[in-house]
Structure formats: C-alpha cells, structure tokens
Image (tube, rainbow, N blue to C red; front, side):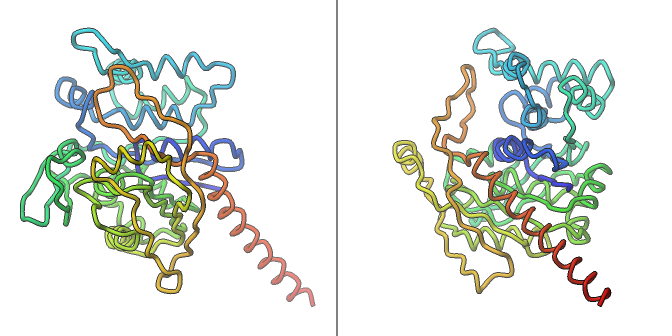
Length: 344
C-alpha cells in the first residue's frame, strides 16, 4: 500500500516515525522547499542550494536506527557555539557536502537513503528557487517564509503564492499518481501545508488522483495564520487550495499539557474550535486523543521558535492504520461478495 505525505517539518516527522513500523506500507514524503529561516537561510544565500532541513528530518524519521542510535544523534547534532557554524546541524552540513560531491540535491538524497538503509522515498516538491509570499486582510504583503511564520502583528493571511512560480518535480507528480492514500498535515497551514499545493502541477495531480486524502488538523492556532479561525474554516481553506474534498479529517480531542498550553495562550495561540458537523461535510470525521504528553526539549544552539505541543506518533499511527485496514477490509468483502454472486 502506497502512503504519501505532503508537508514537511515536525508534523511529517511525527507521522513518518509512527507509520514506518508497519512493514506493509510503502512510505513517501513530498517536502516543501520554501523554508528560509535559520540555517536554511545560509544554505540558500551562501551555497545557492534549496533548504535542506525538512529533507534531513524526513530521512531521519524514515531511518530505523535499531542498535545504531549514534548515527541518528550525529546527524541531528546542532552546533551551539562556533563562529559560522553555530545553529547548524551536522546533518545539514553533510548534505551540503554530499550535494557538492555528487552534483545535486536529488543525488545527495539518494545517497543518504543508501547510507541509512531507507526503503521509503523523500522527494522535494520542486527544484526551483522560489519565495513564499502572503497577502493579508489589511492589504499588506509579506515575502519570505520565515517572516510569514513569525509575524510581528497578528493579522490574517487571505492568500499565498510563490515568487517566482515554481514547477513540481516529475517524481512528486508520479508519487501522487501512485498513492493509495495522501496525508496532509499536521503543520502550519499557510507556511507548511499549502506552499506545497501551490507549486505548479501539484493541484492538478491531486484532482486527478484516485487516492483518498487524509487531513490531520492542527492542535492549536497559529499567530498571523489561523487566529480566530475554526476547524471548519481550516478545512474549507485546504479544500479550496486542493481543488477537491478530503476523505478523512483527524481531529484531536485529547487534553493538551496544561503548563505548556498556558505558554501558548500567552503568545496568542489557542486550541482551534472544533465546529465541524459530520452531516455538513463530505469527509469522515475521526476524533481521538492524538496529543503527545512527553516534554519536548529544544536543542542547544537552536534559535528558531519550535512547537512544544505536538501530535503523538504512536496515537496518530494507530488511527491512520485503522483507516488503511478498514478500507482494505471493505474492498476484500466487496470482492468476496462479487465472487459469490457470480459463482451462484
């Protein structure tokens, strides 16, 4: 069964880490290429390469370390000191070196897949250098994913586009065509999920795809993106950019860690109101406790703001696998019914 994730960042990592334990699944992730914050800014400006962080995170999420946890820790290691390298991960530096040695990002990804013994695929959504641009409800325009992701004012995005226009990779289009299920989210809707969908060719591929689409909703609102917006609002926005309805929506109904959530509230981030009514939507709505309760520690030298409240990989994997197996069972029962009918 071919399972495709479209996204990037921590959200995709959490999903991949849970699903990789199911050996009957063929996992592929299409990652975004507009991240221009932190070390990715240096990668783009000094080396002229596309951002590598989401590629690195996805490779590690698919990596089954077994007894060799040292290799994972080495790839994740972030320099906390040192002029010029502070804030960089060793994994990003190794990927820069491998890209230079082999002549391209795709070749570097393939080599690291071999080194880590990864069976799944990690595919850049585009190889074109492009920046994310957001238009806001006050008429203003902001250019650059990092500035959009960490806004100074809490105003709402009304639309986004890429400057210049970016074209999807052939591998990304092929992955969508082959997929049995396509997972969108979790992740910041306007800076993680939707930027992949506005790459030229992706929307048409999704509309033509026979795959079922699963939308994993976010746990909290995001300043400058979803403040005051409900789960129904977010679903509407997503489906507008996709060009078709989603088939499943996974919504957390578990309690968020109280102490950490209070910190979110102080920053103006709140639990998104779940106002989706099953009878009013075409997708099947699944509500379950999906939140992680373990404390998230920030790496030394990491100066970017990170999510401290996240989905739990095991809980997500359980609900997603239920969807996969229940649909598979329905198909098997249908085939048996047809066989029985024609036999009689």
